[in-house]
Length: 80
Image (cartoon, rainbow, N blue to C red):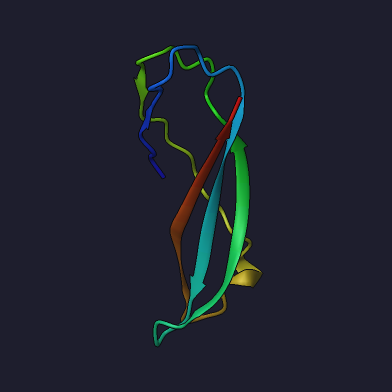
């Protein structure tokens, strides 16, 4: 998953994390559950800097029964 970042503040971001909410979707489009995974931000991010880091989001096979698929729908960021 590729996520674009922009540090619009006046100081560098020195630490933080990104949390992905990966949804398990059934054959009829029903959302059966969400698996969260958290990774570190690629820091430092200088003031005014833009970034487009890419992460691989994985879900254990047993969480996705036959006929279902996954979609990464939610992304949240925490920084310091």
